[in-house]
Image 1: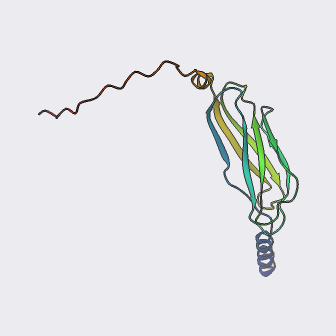
Image 2 (image 1 turned 90 degrees about the horizontal axis):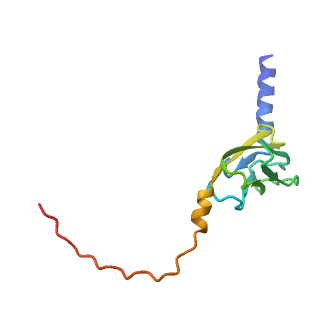
Image 3 (image 1 turned 45 degrees about the vertical axis):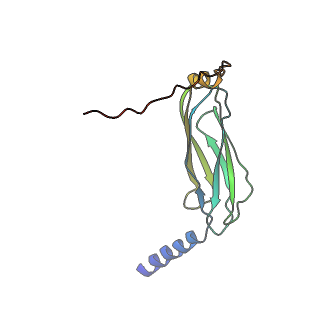
Length: 149
């Protein structure tokens, strides 16, 4: 009986070793502080580090303000694909959103990736302040002063 269990465990190890394996270039994308209505599109790279085709079956966001797009075409061993994630930057304030990625990876059929950042109207004010058209004042010469004791 012990040999049977050991054989099954060994077979399971080999079965997982020769399978499709999902790997991400990063699991969190930090937008930093961005302006309202700026481009909220970002990409996650997905690589199949296994030896069988990897298929993404579904990608779902934690809320309607985040919209993922992906292809269900198989990702061949050693190849990569992208998950396109859009965030609605018209929503002011900090955000931290979860995106679930479902695949045929037998060891990791559900993966989680995240986006985070802050949409700030002050960032927009700074970015949209027009530059002055006045000529710059001439620079004043500075003198080197010796240190005193």
